[in-house]
Image 1 (cartoon, rainbow, N blue to C red):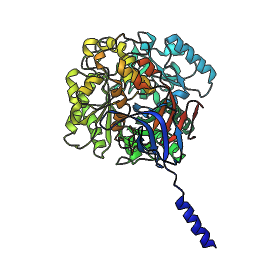
Image 2 (cartoon, rainbow, N blue to C red):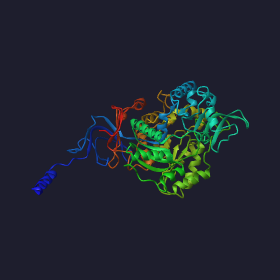
Image 3 (cartoon, rainbow, N blue to C red):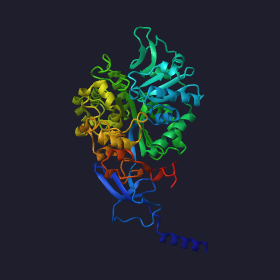
Image 4 (cartoon, rainbow, N blue to C red):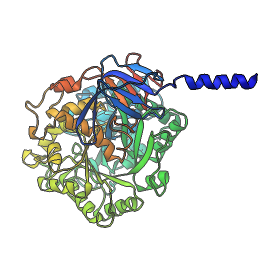
Length: 561
């Protein structure tokens, strides 16, 4: 009898149609194809592995009994966007500490600092970021005295919006044992009041000089790091980012991300670039790591920093700063050290990404890549991060040796006024030169450099097609000949960003075989030419590997369906 029942059960199972794959149907879908063209679809089949199995168009046959059916109700679907250059833990820590990025004057910042100090009596150190003396129209750097006026009794350390300068009060400098005799290390600068050996530090430390202060700042506890990573993921997923290249992952950052992965709390994809060769070898050893946590994490390579930033006059220039005669910026790595570090990473097949903002920094880096490419052949995909100010004579050199220009459109809309003051228009003809890069057959990848800028990629798309900020400035766009089409900018935030991290076989498009990372939007961005409409786009849902990771209607972040 038992055998008969088993036999009948087997017949019944065989006669019952098997549940098919997940079906997302009735959508207004767009994705880039491998040939760089936009492809439209209205349905998508997702396998049990979270990857796309098939894109469907009208008339294509649907699975008869899908395991799960999601009716898109005609809403617009695009691939999850990828930020090719961000700082994940910086974003999370910034969200949990004092944020001055939206302040418009020194007085407003002082008021914010005083309020924060009153509301947070502990820990003793007040830590924050985001100040920008250019936005304030201050005409100078802020000083320790400006901080002492509102917080005289507790140490304060605040990083500039670009992360290339820090602002300390007197108590903080005292605890860091900073005196008039303190000297900045190579590649750094201490701003001083007056001249001579006894000129007192003003409280501003640029680039490597920040280390003099940072050694006195208590590091965050692991529980604080975990909380910061969770908050960063919420912010990124809510903005439609399903993948990010984390530029400058420290050993502590890597441990935090691995803890999240071990606890099944890593909800987006992180392409990690270690903060220097030592951090690279300590985290990945002698070869790139395989994909971890079902394609959520991989140590791809190393991030090096060649110069500083334009706002703090640390960007390395070929000529003097127009507004600071005698200053040409800071070279943080000598030519020999730069090539040695690049070689150490390349010899183990790690990808090399180097921060270069000024025209001289870009020229020096291009020369290093040209020299090393004779030794390290093959598909290296050398990355130049930012590539903001480039001498036009150097633009054709980017196309050689497969160099990738990793750029951030929102930097142009934030910086154009300052760039004109720092350098003058005659030296900016190769600045933020996105269209020139494409015209020279240079692969480009777009990001935001968050938390330096807002991580919202739709702000970047709007900037890329208009060269204007949210207020429509400047009229007609700044150097408008460098504008891109929406398709070109979208490609740089998807396929281009994936290619830049050796991830194009996994993410970046919704083609079969790639992960089903996708967004539901509140509008069709490809049916408008208005940059403000694109800038104001909202992500309704974010899905990673065919599972919902964010739903704006519930204000939630999770794996529910």
